Amino acid sequence: MLISYADDSGTHKQAKIVCLGGFLGDADEWSSLDDAWNAVLGKPEWPSRIKVFHTVDCVQQDKEFREWSYAERLAIFGDLVNVILAFPNLRALGAAVVVDHFNNLSLSDLRLLAEDKKGTPLAFVFHLMMQEVISQGYKTWPGKRIGVAFENSDLTTEAEFRDLYIDYRDGFYRGDCLMPSPAFLPKSESPLQAADILAYSTYQIAMQNIFPTDYVPHFNVIPLFSRLLEGIIHDGGLYDAVALESLMKRVRTGDPSLIGNKKKRIQE
Image (cartoon, rainbow, N blue to C red):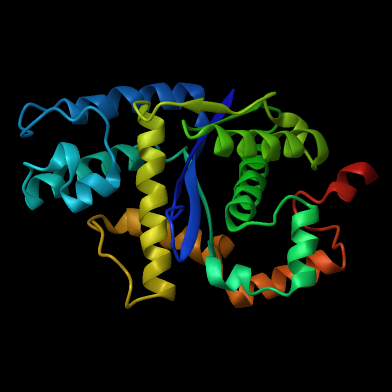
């Protein structure tokens, strides 16, 4: 079975960009990553044993990282990124949208998106993320079932994600490859911590590209990882005003080539 672990970034109040990011891979691959991840967290040279790696806390020297120096925080971040890069069969996926650009769409376009359960920035990036999960799963591992896991959240958000997920499972092209329900797991799961690194870093890259004066520096120490993040952004994962307008032209006409178009599945 394949499993996609995903995390969000930019869902705080007044965020300028909303992002979902994570990885898709074989269950055996995730098991191996878990061993390597916990080996890094358990290194005796660290000032303290980190129970759960939160990227924002590491970058901002907060909570479990309060007593850590910059060099130590940079080192553990780099070690964990190297763990991710040691598993090239994990597919990095991500989607981001500029909140104001989304909200400034015409009322008719917003209504059109809302009719298909894409009426908020978070629902919109969820839609894009699920398209990537299904598309990449089918392309790389055809015939395998896919499970999707998110971090535990409030009941309202979990209910919204579950509803959107079921809509994909039952109504969209190749959605029948999905497991019956998404899982909501604690952040102590190492794959969710890896997804957190990807989502946080993708968010910061998007901010750097769109809002450079408001961009908060983040750890950016490994060129290969930087290229992975830039790949997500430049391969169509970041929706600004131009990308949104291009997409909406296709949505308005019911373009059957859109991934996830319900009509396409009916035609088959």
